[in-house]
Image (cartoon, rainbow, N blue to C red; front, side, top):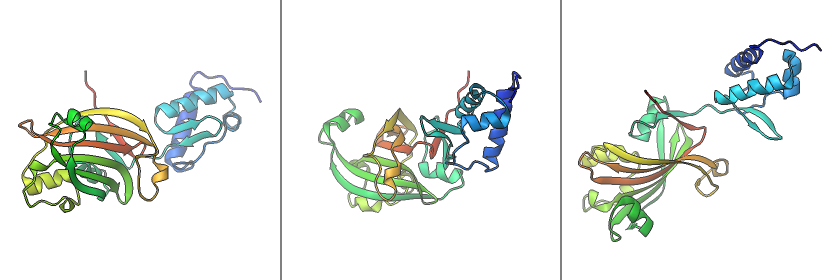
Length: 240
C-alpha cells in the first residue's frame, strides 16, 4: 500500500481517534488497535501512528504500557484545583457527585516525633487520629490520614462523633474556619495505602501532605491525603 505523505496527517489521526474515544467507540479502559492496524487503516507508517498516539497521551486521553498496548484513560470522577483550599466534600459535590466518608480509625493519642516536627508542636501534644476513605457516589477517590489537636474540641468530645466532612464539622460544630493550607505534593506508588473492598486496584496516588490553619495561624489539622491517580484529578490555574 502506498503511504500518504501529508504534514498534518498525524493531527488528522489524533482528531479521528479523539472523536471515537469521546463517542465511546473505545471506552474508558479499552484498548486501541495496534500501531500496525492503525497504520493500515489510515495508510500511514507506524512512525506517524506513534506520533499521533504520543499526542493523545499528552492530551490525557490514552496511556501506553510497554508490551501490552495503548489504553483509553479512565476519566476522573472529581476535578479540583490545587490553588484553592477547601472541603473535599464540596469539590465532590461541585463535580455532581455525592460525597461519603468511611472511617476505619477514630482515636486519641500522643504525636510521634516526626509528626511533632512536621506540625511544629511539642512531643506531648495529644491529637485525634482519623483514617478514612473518601467516596464520590460510592466510588473511592482518596484515603486520608488526619491528626487534629485535642485542645480544639470541647472536653466531652469523643472521636466517634466525627462521621463526615472534617471541614464541615469544624465550621458547624466548633465555629472554626480553615483559611490557610501549606501543602507538599508528591507522587506515590504503594500497595500499603489503600484498605477496604477493591483496595488492590489502588497503587498510584497524588499525596497532599498538608497543614491547615485558621485566620489567626492556629494549627487546625495535619492531613496526609492520598488521592487516587486518574480518579481524583487536580487542575492548576497558572497566570503570567
